[in-house]
Length: 458
Image 1 (cartoon, rainbow, N blue to C red):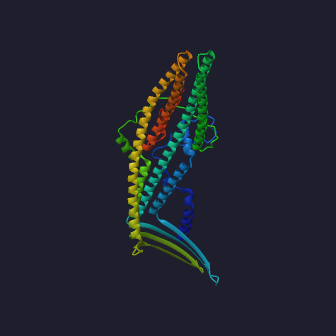
Image 2: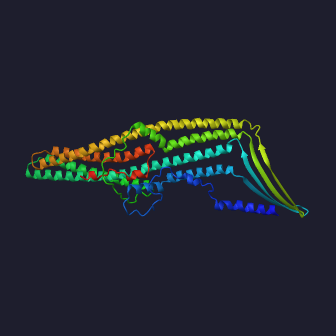
Image 3: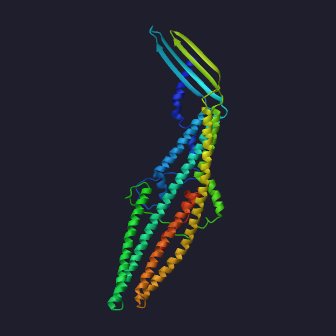
């Protein structure tokens, strides 16, 4: 009777286990990101969006709503579950069987049994399987972090591009106003008889061109806002307003020895960490393939109770089972060869990625250096162009200058404004691109000063 009670309890335990032990090995705790992407771990509500969005809001909404983010997280959770599967190999397996039959002479027989098996030794195959799953989980986490950083960069680019197009529209309006003022001045001088019809026509043409530029800038802004809404996972017709950071001088803390930056990137880049984890997983796969062709030793215990024709019998056994594979048609040999080839393939991919990381850092670093110098130069260019335009228009209104000088000065000022805006866009995106190339792109970057269009409002 004791054996029968033990069997019933074991069946109940096995059926109830998934209900209270959904993750008994706590594998999901191992999926936490190494470098959090943002300063918040919760997703903001998708609507409404009445308040202006700061850069952090844009990044958070993008990461929460982008399907690639959810897919990357799901992949890491799936691999964490595979690690749980490999960990289960260190626990015994228990199975129960219950059967009943009735013969033609109305004899009824019932039996219930319980079998326990526990692997004692398998030449490292079990450990290799767990190591393989552990490294594949590390690779999945690193790939997820790489995906998140790429989406992070896309969100930042969309944010600053929208601000830049807003600034470009503001600049186009300023140019249109200046052209209108020049046309008014030329018309006044023409009526006074101190200007030629050519001056008036040239000013009118410039004014029309300025209006056309403003109309085009409005169209570009509409497209940028639609692209931003799409990046946030919203319909393109959603109205989104943005918060602009205070304009600050460029942060030059990124200026370091380029070799130091490359070395740090090779240490931190998540895609390179994923490739290195793939190598270690492949090496563990070789060990597992080698162990699969070797003997294994298991502990086996079983108990059985049978009732038939009023007779009851109880049997039990305890022993060890040695399994020695003798010949499997050379399959283990080829599995080992395939695993070894996978190691070489993983190493080649990691080596190629390592050189690509160095190139990414090199390009991003020098792009940011160029953008920084462009920001400084564009400040001087805009200041001198504004002064030149004021002088030229003043001279013309005083009757001592030509309309050609005014139009040239206004054209130079419009160009300087656009270069001023582009330089800031390149710098804001460039600093994030360098962080992404370094593998250090996270929420702390959102707290650093950024260039906005404030200087464009001049």
